[in-house]
Image (cartoon, rainbow, N blue to C red; front, side, top):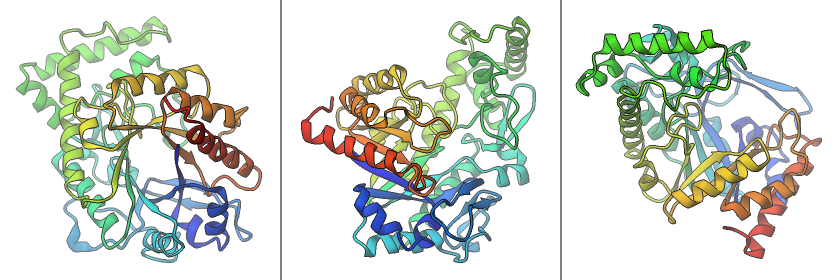
Length: 388
């Protein structure tokens, strides 16, 4: 299994031991966050601090005024260099370690707060400031510009696209107090964007936007009042479901096309995604045409067990053979994976040929053994021919 380890720019440039430690670990490439959302990131390898507070989303390359339209990313003042991602990539390249560009696209609370008209709006008219709507032309232009500016002048083996689609209601936002409150059906209905661009698309498909909004609100209220947290949306709004999904997928396809147009030939294209087309978030649901555009699809397999393994097997059966299936696993969860080595082997047997490992900077000395075990298992799968 090909192994990609994820890292922040400061993990690479501020830690003199990073490159050698990664070499010893044996990953095939390091994915550097070039465009990233807000975070408080632990720095367990640093003798001088315990964390970095990235107060807002930022581009870790120089932000050139002339490169942007109405939406422009902020620069980070919590790193010393205006080109910390570029510095990290060049350091890796000079050390002979292949680098991947890790790009977060539609997840930007800073821009969403400043420009609310470009965000996802639910059927109650509530805005999600963390979620830029891909149905908006300005958002697609922004994502394409992020891609172009992130890659400019650097040598990447891979480009990894995160949040290359819609985000929705279920997402970390300040001190999140919605976890476990909504049923899956409510969360998905509240993740349907009802901004003006999306309403226009509904109208073009023959739906009355006002009536459609009324149906959505009524269905959300009915599900909330029923108190059934196990309810699903499978049989909800049969006359609207296809229009809503088609609208979302057309916008997602348009976003991806504009982003891909900015990537030069050469790097592999890896897409974070989900097989369920209704999923929103950092790994949004794949559209029917998405597999044709990418070299690999990465599934979130952070929760170990049969659901994750079965999801990999299902993806392998459904995706074209030319598209690799990657498993995104974490070594820094609050509850560690009981046997990350065995779990990695099971994912490989189910059809995953790539292991995406989170996280080379967050995993300090206390978690490094889990990274070693996962990489060792990935190499064992490949050598034994257990994949698939």
